[in-house]
Image: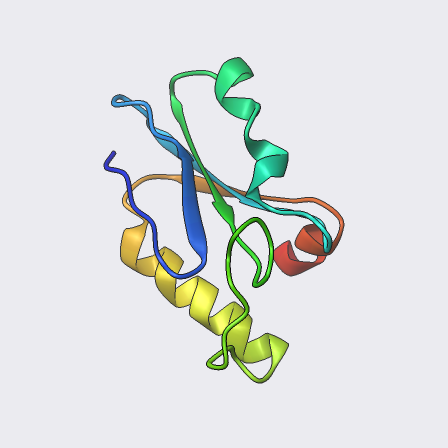
Length: 101
C-alpha cells in the first residue's frame, strides 16, 4: 500500500505488505493522535488511517468547510473511495462510532 493523505484522511501507519486497511474516526474532541500508538501494537497486515476533523491537531479551520454534516460525510466517503484498494474496516469511537452507522 502507498502512503496517502487528503483533505480529511491522514495516514498513520503503512506497512508494505498490509492486506487490510483500518479507517479510524476519533471522538468529537479527538484527533488522529488518538490512534498514534496503534502502530506499536497492531499487526503488519493492517494499514491504519484516521479522519482528521477541522480545527484538531493542526488541521486548520477553513472557510470552505462543508455546510452540513451530510456534505462533510459525503466528502470523506468520496476521498475514501479514491484510495481504497484493499479490504477495509471502519473503527469509530464515540462520535466516530455514530459516523460508522
